[in-house]
Length: 167
Image 1 (cartoon, helix red, strand yellow):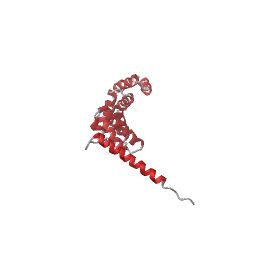
Image 2 (cartoon, rainbow, N blue to C red):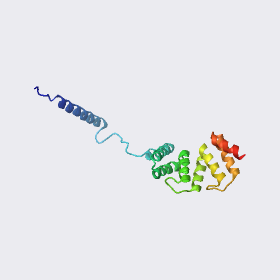
Image 3 (cartoon, one colour):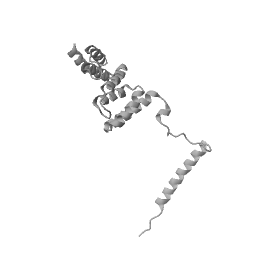
Image 4 (cartoon, rainbow, N blue to C red):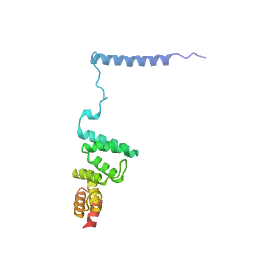
C-alpha cells in the first residue's frame, strides 16, 4: 500500500502562514500601536436619536414575539422615551392588557395620546375607545368622536365604523 503524502498538512500550514503575513502587513500599514477602530461601542454612543429609537423598538418587537413581555416592556420604554410612536402605542397596549406590567388604563391612555399626537392612526382609534368606555379617562363621547375622526382621517377603517355608530 502506498504511503499518504503530507500534502494536506503542508497546505494548511501554508494557508495559516499567509493569513498571519497579511495580518502583519496590515498592522505595519496602520503604524506601530495603531489599530483599526473596533465596533465595541453601543448604538447610543454613535448618536442619532431616531435611529436608536427604531433599534430599541425592533428589539422590543422581537422580545414580544418570543413572549418575554417584561423585556419587551423595557425596550419599548426606551424607544417611547425617545419619542417613537409605534413603541408608545405598543407599550400602551401592554399596559391596557397587562402584559409584562400591571393593568394601568391611565398610563395606557397617556401613551396612546402621545402616539396619536404624532399621527399614529391605531393609537387615535384606541384613545377613542378609551374615551367612549371611560377606561383610564373620563367618559366623554365628544372626545371619543374627535379621536375617531382623527383616526379615520389617518386611514383607520374601524374608526370610520365607530364614528358611524356614534353619530
